[in-house]
Image (cartoon, rainbow, N blue to C red; front, top):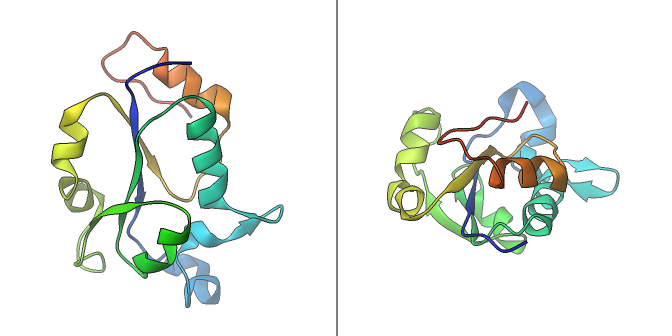
Length: 126
């Protein structure tokens, strides 16, 4: 599938509700079926043709760089919310259509393809 949709994964928060699991790593590095949540997302986005794929990091963002380019960093991740985090990537978001995803959810190629193929200005998959 050829398209001009980018993807931005919001991976700035710690995920403190997960307790000790996220004490030493971001929640998107939690394993599910021997693969991180982040890797599941990257594979789905790539499989549907999203390009480029980038991330906004915050908490221990350097750990994400083995999986994805962390092009944006919210250094105040522990003081701010997702709106401030997204503003760190405003130029990227304005460049072309983007899929924006929290880093701790699981979805497949078909979900991403439905978003890319949507004729709507704004589409949400749930």
